[in-house]
Structure formats: C-alpha cells, structure tokens
Image 1 (cartoon, rainbow, N blue to C red):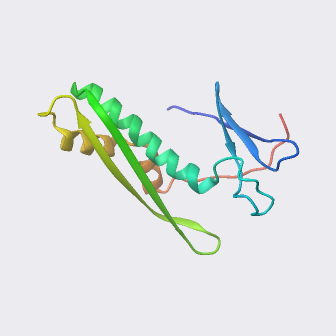
Image 2: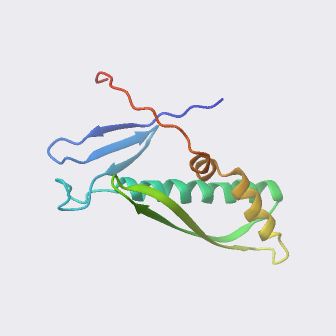
Length: 138
C-alpha cells in the first residue's frame, strides 16, 4: 500500500490557499468575484481535470517506457462536466493525441494499457470514498 499526503493552508489576506506536496506547490482559489475569490489559482473543478489529465499523461509515459516506445508528442485535453446542487462532477472526457518517433509503434495498445493503469481516473470511476474530519492546526 502507498499513501500520499498533500497539505493546503490559507494565504493571509487573500482568501486563497496554497497546496504542496514535497517541494511542489500550487495556488487554489475561486474565480474572481465568486465568494471572495480573486482568481489567484485553480479552482477545485480545474484541479480535478488536471489530476485526471496529469495522471494520464504520466501513465502514457510510464507505459511507453515499458513498451519501448519513444513518444514524440503528447497532448491531453480533459473536459469535466458538472451538474446539480451541490455541484457534482458527472462525467469526464479525455481526448488524447500522441505521436511516436517510431511510426510502427502500437499506439492503440499504449492507450489501452495507460487507461487500464490510470490511478486517478480508475479511482474516480470506482467511487473512491472521501472522509472529512476536524483536526487541530499543525
């Protein structure tokens, strides 16, 4: 079993937050004019799309490496659809364009294997449970 922890903390005088894991950070905010948001960073829906697409990009490179395929280009676009009140993600569509240096590479097989191993999209599809609890600051 593997665990990963990310931390988020409010940025004083902004109502935005900064999130980090290890030495990497990202700013999280609401759109400008929405509930005090200033548009200083990504909102949660955008982060969900980035998590799906970013994980899939990594999976493409992992699987390509395993299959001995050298990728010339990778383009991934993710569209997340939201509906209801409270607003919930109801679907995510991932469009992928890849090119290999070797024109005979099995890109269909690469896509299938990357999809089968994609941690984030498979976790969401399975309905990963989320538990929220109160704690003290640390």
